Length: 630
Image 1 (cartoon, rainbow, N blue to C red):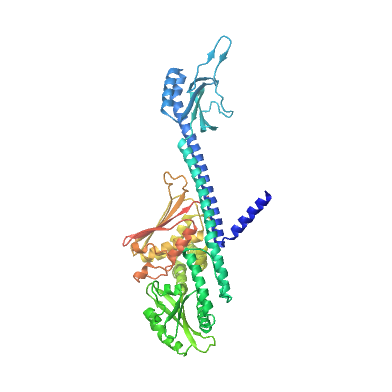
Image 2 (image 1 turned 180 degrees about the vertical axis):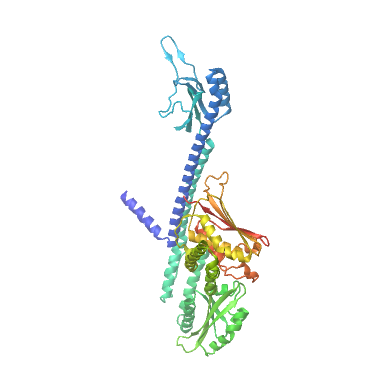
């Protein structure tokens, strides 16, 4: 027995070792995914069962209260006939009720459905039925008691409703509620399907693994051994595997290649060495686009990357003149250098060219001569192509960095300058309280200026997950500080600033400095795009929970609305992108296009999203929601 187990283990180990690393990882990933999905399914089944039991409890409590309200007056009048008729009608019309029992204050059952029987009495013996109440039954409390117990048919819900008239305890009504059969059948079906799917997945994985080991892995290993033998110069290597399909064709091609190499080994050694030098040059640049041409500009080899960059997919360019296949912009740049290199006048050249077709991009082209083994004559020219579009875009973004910084620093610098000029020019006319208020604002703006410098320089850190401290934030204070900062700017432009903050607004979870930066950017943009006589409103209010939404947490909405020029619908999706500016289309206002990108990132850091509604010529409203501080 032990020998058999050892043999099985060895067979499994050998079978597993035949798989490639990719196949092993796929099998492990399949196991993990199947286990996770199965766990989630069983968790969902358990959740459904819990919800069903909770619904049964609520249904039983409500049903018991309804029935008790109808029969309590009859019990007070001792009208057992009416009680029996009413209970029988109620029991017949409701399939969910399992039983109904009526007991007096001493626990004696005086009526029950469906198994009520009168007491048996004789001269020697009296047999009567009594209800066994739970130990924690509250007695004369007016609230019903609910419990559940298991039966062969499922979980039955027991409801005990005290019968009270004019604060007098008359007895108890006990009702049994059958389980929800639809939920039971649904959960059992879901569990069975999950188990079947799990088993099916692993049967398919095992079958696929066996097929892979027998039909793919073994031939590939044989091919790998053959390629290594060819690389060492053993051209007598052959592969003898009876396979069909693409692998069979590959093996036949390999054997054919080995036979040709064996025949040409001696008579074509010099040409083979030259081809090897060409291939080594191509392999050394395979990560980029590579084209190999001879001295007559005829294409010898071209890799897929070069075909994609030059849009040569589907075209047989090998054997044709490379200058006839290149885009005109590239052809104009490299024609003369190619002929100079073919003539031996130079060894290499480099170009950077902008292309508009088929897509707009920038490429770098490197030209290098390919020499023979003795490095005495030129055998061809290697053309290396690199797509540097992303690099160019990053350089352009870097060149705009200074202007982006100025966009974020302009407002606090302007405010500091404005308040200081006001103090300088009108200091004698201002009261001590006004001067203190101005100096306080200047101090706030100076602190904010320092923070803005760090925030703008760390925009990339903000996007990559830089951590910030979140605490309770008083939005009313942040809004008041923002409006006080922009009041002079608004007054100079003839724009009315409106503050609409709900009274007793609760604290929100956030970072005060980041939210202040969001409000400053939105109000600053609103003032910039609003004409004289317009209005800019800053509102904050708590949202009412939506009906039928039990999981929605309370939130506070912040809105910045203006009566400005508005934003066209085609621009509304792009205005939050970095460096995008609506005014780029009209060239009327200055800006860097970084402000709304910062707003979007900060709002997303707060677990929310910024939205907008805008109409050209009417105005724009930005809003976002913030969670309450617990």
